[in-house]
Image: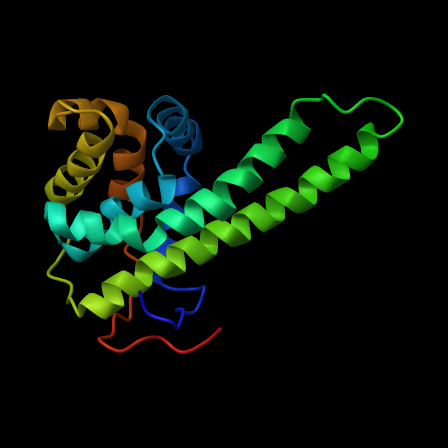
Length: 190
């Protein structure tokens, strides 16, 4: 893994915000996260690489991608999500409930930053790989998501991907093509 980190605002982050901001996408991805323990950021990266870059991942590339962010996700994002969900559950009782709600708001903000950092780690993989966009396609996105899901659910097929990610794929299809400004060099700091 490289020691430098991309700027936190990059084409993949902007794409993720655009897709995730569509109605039904958060619920769909969170359901898959809860049912199959997926890393939503990796799923979005697979989608972005296929849909926007035109890359059909190999198993080796997917392994490399997952290796890049597994520790960050497991040690930072997942624990923050656990704390946020615990605070949301309402287990805090009066007179501290209001303070717990304030804490949850702060944890949610930090969790988003942790996810943004994970996405920068993933985007660095793309930059370090020195790939160039070849024009995206939905079929490449579906193939990437299917490959990703097979790691978690053996026997997963493309038909299941089309059903499980239906809302997310549709949101990706309707997303305005962002101004990518791809480069073969690492983006500068923030």
